[in-house]
Length: 459
Ligand code: GAL
Image (cartoon, rainbow, N blue to C red; front, side, top):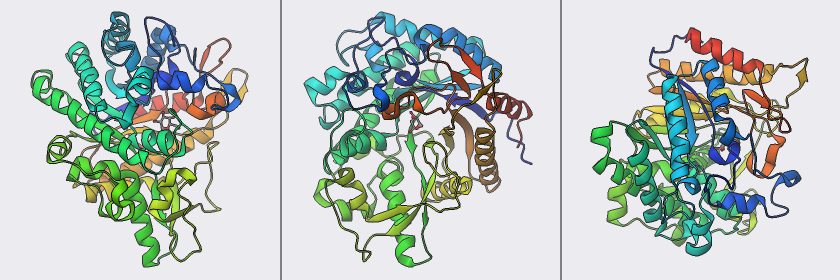
């Protein structure tokens, strides 16, 4: 049994594009995801997110769901295009108002808002006119937008996440191309990653110089990482797993916490990995007040050299080829409907890795959860598999905390079933089921389970 500290943060997460809908309402501009989802062939079953969970209209109801869950925190993202429809220029007052109402309502209900500034929905105008994250000036556009958010919301919002999962923007958006803006390259992901770090650094500088002292908030980034377990005990596989973690999490966390890219990346990627200027490092190193981690799954890592493994620079944008790691799964591992392995001990190993490498930072698990198919029986959804998943992962968090790893909070992905990017509505991650025709929300059994966990505050 583990009792969590009294002030432990129990929350849920969502993102604007995945739940809001209202895609062209209230003065909102188009994002790259609006564009991408309207491009035939990009999304499973041709699903679009014009309405999604209609949170844009139903946010009051959703805040009631949060209240009923008993969470003390809620992580949401701001749609940049509601604040600045073109990504820069004229501010849209209606968009400012929309999040302002949500923030007020959360606070009224004793739920602490955690705001993410960028959860992948870059303004389309910035993509089309300015070349999106490939343009180094994006750091200025992003930090100008961030400044507006600090100004408007910072007296009420004390927890900021600049970027959600830059790895995904870089690799899936510009490497593999299955996410917006749908580009495929083995060079662009590294340029994009570099500019994401610079944009974050610039936004943090603005926050720290102008707002942090008076507003007294914290700011950081949410990075995603799976655990990579060496496939065998060979030195080659142990090194391969280390390299895989460096290419995944170290790519972003090393510059943020240590001020440079991992050595393995510099060696394997060579000239395709941009170099930081002194000014960049000044902005980026030490720019996180905490370590935000999104974690879902684990894979085996095996060294690719000497395995007859061919480098195909066009597959997967080249990133896995650069790592020289072959990934695989254990047959005994259970899977979610995303085909992601359920390996709770992977989380504690990852937490230990983070704790050692980044010298005992304060960690928030900003996302964790699982997709399983909902079966509704007499208005009830018995999602025991989700309960088992969450329970087993939270136990690992408790174990890690016992070892002295500093974990301050945990956010379930997600409050509601929602639009799962290129997979549309086919995957259900929520503590609440959504009927997309009637938009009716039904709490699943996992919602009651999470509520009782929060009440007991122990596992
Ligand atoms: C994360 C992402 C979320 C959600 C989740 C489940 O990578 O931040 O938006 O989609 O995965 O796939």
